[in-house]
Length: 302
Ligand SMILES: [Zn+2]
Ligand SMILES: [Zn+2]
Image (cartoon, rainbow, N blue to C red):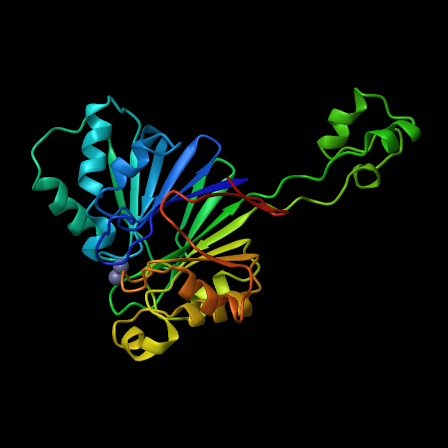
């Protein structure tokens, strides 16, 4: 299960209700951040997620609204006694941007900050999950990301195993793929259980690579800076409309679409939400602090 927490859902500038872009995803003991807008550390502190559990920060691109939260957050972790490394990944240019931001602030940091630029296809491996970088189209070096939970082996049908003469001690061998007393593991083991998949578009025009990466995802988190009435503006600024995001969700057959990065001009979020629902009904526009538990079989709002 992946827990997804929308720490900041604004586009470009914050508002009274919205903090700058950041989606946090928790799997096991790891918290991952996708973008880290200014104010992210404060949002984390009033959220159920611990900022000390952050293992990696994935930047979708280097526009200021998406990265200005990095130095403050990294300093606070240092002041709080962090020793474990933090990984920062992003498109070309990330190393110099983050390097300059960190160099311009005084204050020592006593833990390793590992900054590594990524190309589409780059894979970050965590315990029980992975994050793959995906190409996107925002007029600057940019990436989307696909986070996937590893699949789990099928469950053993204990009743069937027993009826075939297996004893509890035999089941460990069956789990290891060994045939016991003539009973093959396949006979008493259910199908492999696939893990959850969440795709984060970052800022982008609608693009084929995100559509492809989102194929079969349980949740697609897609930017929807504008509504269809401003499609020309969206095109000019390399953003998407709510309708276009819904088109991607529909084509990729995702389970649920969550719209983020909606321009402050749309104060009533139900408007872009309704627009997207006209072609992809299972859509919500995220509000700051909305949280979901995403598994391969269900998505629960918590
Ligand atoms: Zn942005
Ligand atoms: Zn941008």
